[in-house]
Length: 251
Image 1 (cartoon, rainbow, N blue to C red):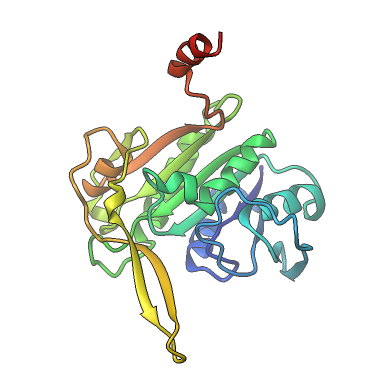
Image 2 (image 1 turned 90 degrees about the vertical axis):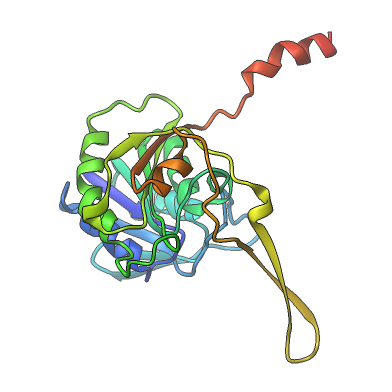
């Protein structure tokens, strides 16, 4: 099995090392094509106004001066000798749950793989909720079995899977649950205003570290309960419940 791995944290990210370890439990034919620089929050963006360059790092490792989506396209269309059978994206440093799905470059890489007809899985390691000093321990311990089980499935057209590992010790994990995409309280999004050395204001966007009280069955609730969250996602964003309403308005 030929596997492509990528991420949005960049070619030198520790999570990419963890993901390569996971991939190599499945196959020896593993290719790494990742952004030269961090692309967190890049979403499903393409570099259309700037040229792309790639550099061979060594072995089957390449860096691309672009987004995670660019990396998948470059890997499939230019770098790899043949199409991968599987794309793994991550392991992201930080959760990709609820509304994160629309921002995440990690998930976007899996989306691009799905659009190309390749089975794709996004993997993320939650951090910052529980302080345990074992950043990728849960992903390393449980990732191989989770991916192996998912490989047995036919995802179907336009579908991908989003996996989130809880922020706890690997022996504290309370199982794996199938979840729906949750909804984050948007009051958690913060704008931190600061002043530079010349007295000019600049801003950092971020999130409050607040677990909230999400509904049972969501990805949010799962990771807060020290469970591995597995969420099926679909590329088609059509809101079917609104179709008839809109047809009535525009009749």
